Image (cartoon, rainbow, N blue to C red; front, side, top):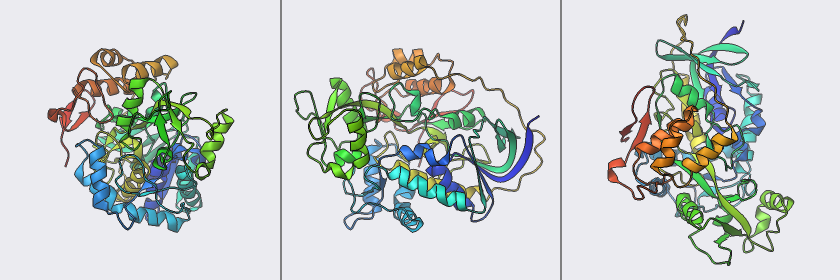
Length: 464
């Protein structure tokens, strides 16, 4: 029989968003962090890009906000963008105080009008931040970390989330923060590790939480053709060029990612020319390419788009509250509306830091847990993510979609792929990370967010 325990606050996920939430909350309460794997190898460790923040002398949060809105194609939530960009400098200062050693100078990446991206170790920013936060969390007397313990269900009583269920135990808690990452590993070509399958989003939806923006999937334009290894946008920010087989440039390398991705997709192939940049600034990336048999100093590297970042997720307010009381979400599994239709480069780690912290601080304000004898059990069908399913997502909900493929995917037995298809069918236009060949232009009628809830038809909402 599964044992029952109680905790003040449960954080599900050991990446940057989860650890930021745990560290913020631990100043006031005890926190249990449940991680499906080691926190020193979370998805955040794979984040090559930097953190965007208006800390340069020629920059300001309002300029950062303007660039975020521009990349988001007119549907970014204004309040979320304002919160993200205004709090960014303070979150960078926090990391410096914690001991993160950022590189000198600021980088510029696609969609940014200023140099405002801080990096660590060239293209190992995620690793530097995640490692520092993990070390602090492990050392904190009020944080308990359980690795290798995935959450398989949420406890719900009287419409409220009152804890979690794992294979080992049932944990009652007055608040639960989901920080489980995105679902980009559902696609056949991906830059993500295999575990990024949207499990937390699935759990939240089955518990009654609203989801939004699932159709907006950011395909990174420059992943290694062989295996999807990410070649960071920081390379293009420092002058790397995209060329065709004849060596001719065909796009603006620093345009928003959806623009660059479609430019490559239209040609079917491209190469990234690293010969004109200071390659020694990116030792890890260059070493990986050389181990793969490439010589970046001699020839351009073959690249192609791959699923990289999922904009949609669990609908939350600016403090991480979902539509289910007691349930919070932060990071890539959440949807505040901050990214609109297309995430601005290097706003993702920033999102984890800003909204993870806010979720942790808000969650400790939840009322004490009452008796939970009426916890509702649920049986969720388990669907294995097979190569065939991942291929179907790539073919039917890839860089370019159409009704025919999306309707086919909407018949899938797998929950999240089906919901992605339903969202994409509901958005009969092209905007940001969602491009339909049968509706190839933006339509003001769809200038909002497609929201999904259990047993309800998709609906469009406009958020302020």
